[in-house]
Amino acid sequence: MWVTAAAKAATEALLGKQFQVAQQIHLPNQEEPLRVPVSSAALIDDRKQAIGTSYAHSGIALDLTQGLEIWACVQLQKQLSELSGEEDSEKDSWLTLVAGVGVGRYQSTAELCLSGFARELLHLNLRPLVPIGQTLRLEIVFPAGRELAKRTSNEAFGVVDGLALIGTQAEAQISSSPEQLQSNIETLRSICASSGFSGKLIFVIGENGFDLAMKLGFSSQQILKVGNWLGPLLVAAAQFGVQQLLLIGYHGKLIKLAGGIFHTHHHLADGRLEVLMSLAVAEDIPLDLIKLMGKADSVEAALLLLEASNFDLAQNLWKRIADVVEQRSNAYVRHYGSWPIQIGATLFDRQRRIRWVGPLGFKQLEAFGVSLDKLV
Image (cartoon, rainbow, N blue to C red; front, top):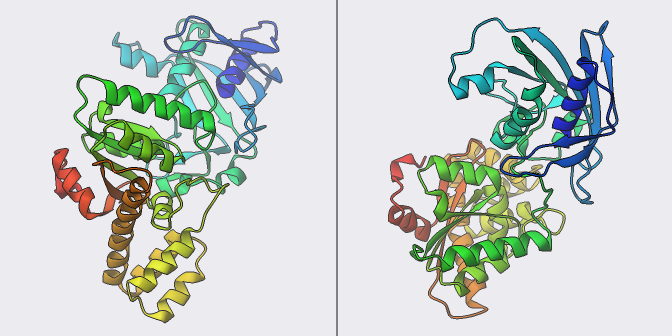
């Protein structure tokens, strides 16, 4: 939202319009625009370019991007070729996006990491400003983006050099907030009450889990993207009649469940490395390797150390983790009631490939019709 506002202010400056301290930002499928404050907009480079600045303000104290400074540098260029007339081509041809300093790029393609929602916001609000026969070059800069990105899991999912623009809605939410939990419960209730509900459901952890589930062929109607309140949501799923529940998540999240931690936000509880060490002992990993793993900076690093020493031992350990995630999740729900729910677990790696699956998870993947040859 704030990137779009800064870019709109800069584009208006380039067109000679008066500066507005708040930009009206139009939203997909909504009639009323939002007013988003901007800090400044000015012409630069002998009036050939303009820059707009804003500061992200979600109002959420734990939000990593709260107060993030944003620069949007714009330049109008002559259109080099005629549009094809197709809507998709028209959407892309008028705008050139550049990942500036502090903005995340996909490591594999070097392209800016941008969600469909973010791209649509830019289209709705900037496209009407671009004169016929011209295109807009937009370079986005987050001056503090590289440092802040080190505190995220971006790099684990192939996004490097900064923060990604992966928002999916205008409202700021935090996955650990009580409001987010209540919203998920109401969505879950609605899914389970629908006439077509079969008793089977998938919980995915975050955007990466949702993206992976869709690529595996699951229907969006079968998927609920959840935040960090996994414990209450597991119980709610059982209460609402879910009988087969499949968890799909990054190993750095789901490993917490193996340690009995059912609120997975790192601000509240971590313990991932400690859980890994405990399960390594249970798997009879040699003590010298366990000590080496215990000195690692992260679960991922500890796994890589073990794989480098003994690949088979590493695979056995991660299979145990998936198994224990299932055991602890089912035990958690049984503590609150005797429902017939079965909870399976699948864990994906930093390349977003499903790698480790518990016994119930395998059965549920088959029941959902997911080919097991897609697993590594």
